[in-house]
Image (cartoon, rainbow, N blue to C red):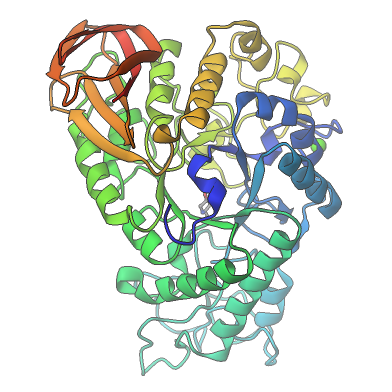
Length: 539
Ligand code: NOJ
Ligand code: CA
């Protein structure tokens, strides 16, 4: 076990819930906290032991809640603080941890702090945001300056969309000619850091088990190598380890070595330019927000994918991070598009989960991906979603009005339900023992009952070659080795290799269209079309 890691993290499997689209209990067309509560049986049945809820705090919802106007208050459309506390309590009693979404880099323009900060008269919040010293000043390269909003004669810097003004954590190397660029040690940034700790403590005291941290690397401006931003997180981590040793910090950073050096327990692998190898696994060229520079996905029936793009990147990152924390492979999230099931058969999706649930680190399953929901094309942008909107449609519970998501009238729904719902829904899949849901559930239970398959155990590649299948790797702990073989292609493949030791016992834990033969020390994997194996060897 790594130093100072929350004890539950090693076996954690996360399920991400976009609250507005999960389950609506009052018919207003928007999912709510009580809706999540009502589905805890389902979540427990799936077997995940942690959920991450996208921001559920008061907000004008111009960016789906990533524009917070009060960090201490649940958005009325989702319910009350008491509802959230109840949900956390009930989840915890079922062995399910609850992670909230912390947005430390910016607030909504509607936030009272920003409204005070933009005033001409100096006040407590004047330096909580980044303002230059004249509304007429030139643009700043690399910073997103908006002119003409404030009463004070200054422009503010936004972090993402224009309505998300950046909180002031200072500049790594303030320009001496521009005194408005403050060092991290200035009173404004220090007050902001204190406030962030206060928010963290507030929700941890109410039972939350930690946070997914939005744009975690964005805090300090013009911070090459993220050195100063890293120091802030190291300080927050040290403070948390002392007061809340079982709480977790999970970064949206995308550079695991940097994020974990900075004190995060987990960094999510996001695809895109930071982790192109991850994109090469799941998302084909030309469809995603981040174009895949490598061409074919590995999980594609054509079998043109090249697993070495992922393996080279991943093994290097694993080496850099292994002493520090975990990486999180995600099926998707509310930003990543299309959904992972797009262009994949249910059989292929089962292989995806065989992979996800036997890899090191902490796996993340995005709601709906456990039943193979797909991207909805052609939707008007909702709450700043743009292309992301199509991965945010309501959860498909059953083949009835609004797919069982809401009793409201269909025009009132947060987003329309995907037309796929009569075929792809929870009720169907619960009833079918060979469904994707039941396969995911089975693989989750295997991971939970075999520590060798969890976050920490050793990972080594047995066979990963460009232009060749299968991909074979193993996970090892003490005298147990677990062999995973994947053949996503529509071709049969056979692979023979020599085991180091003759195993005392050998058993198949999972097989799809494949089998193994062991003769002396020679292991042969016979892999049919779109096939996978999970074999346990004890020595
Ligand atoms: C990352 C979040 O995941 C995304 O949805 C949001 O728009 C930006 N950060 C800005 O907070
Ligand atoms: Ca509702």
